[in-house]
Length: 350
Image (cartoon, rainbow, N blue to C red; front, side, top):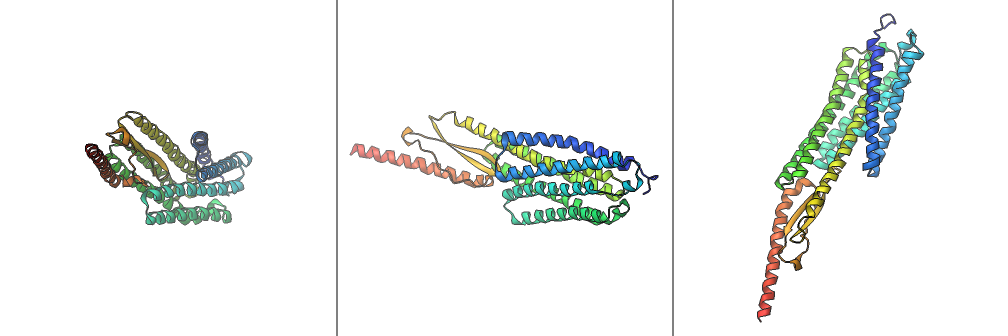
């Protein structure tokens, strides 16, 4: 593509517009990072993952600024320079691949904790590895063949990268939706209205975040295949890493907010009638999301005001079975109290 044939809007204009969009999303990411580390920071591994994302995304954003400045300012009108791709493009491709790897791995771990399915984890892990391989292969080929005329060599790795990334995002969203809906149905049987509303909110987040990243990946792929030498796909891809990071941050911050809300609700319910009722509260883990579950049992005699022990709830999906067990235990407990009172009455008569 000669300089005379250069479409400024499809090449340089696309890079500038993509850089602007990425800057706006990066600002939102910084706000979410600030919210997490100042209010909800917990867990060493999660903090390390988000800190890595912050470093990677900052590097990616700087590389985009360098690319736009080089093409549009330093080498404006340099025909030979505008026909090649340089280190800022390679850096942005590698960092985008790393962002997708970190976020998708986090979501796969959450999906595995909910589904307890090794098959699901293996399939999703394979898709993540394929996407990472496609992204790194794209960067390597550009390093070896940097001219825009050689972009046809990227068709296969680019297709693998974005197709597997979109498929992985959709699959993760479907697994989360299925597992959270299953848990929500169990919560409905326990008449946990606050918990049910929180789970519905988490399902909505899974749908929104998974659909956005997968849709953008497919749009980038179709745009690139339509015109490989234009930079429209590159400009769109500038923002892909930031969307992945926001996906993780929104999930983490929303989960903490819902956990705090449920904890406050459970604490408020426990303060009502402690003179007539005994209550036990359990913390139930939902793939890293902690929710409160409270069981209340009426006590006939203050002398026997001892808490009813529940079997340890490892997963909220088991609540249905535990409810029947709890009811049976409560019945046996009250029956034992009645028998003790009967024996004490007989002893008094004797």
